[in-house]
Length: 55
Image 1: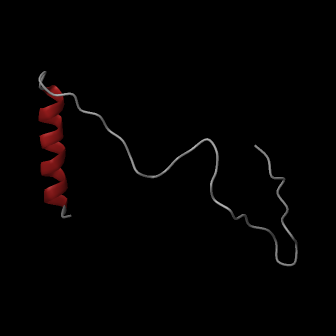
Image 2: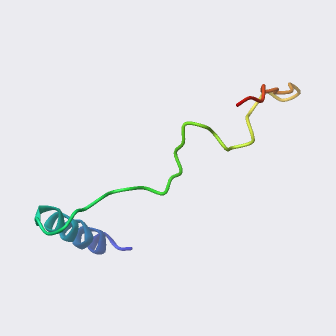
């Protein structure tokens, strides 16, 4: 997406947000969560990383 397209989209969203006949909700798809589902960690070379499993 070009910078011009981004600016046009932002302008459109601003107009829609100001209209009273629309409800505009923002969300992202980054996947933030309070509980991690990433099954890896880092550790120093030669050192084993152990993580306690729990609920």
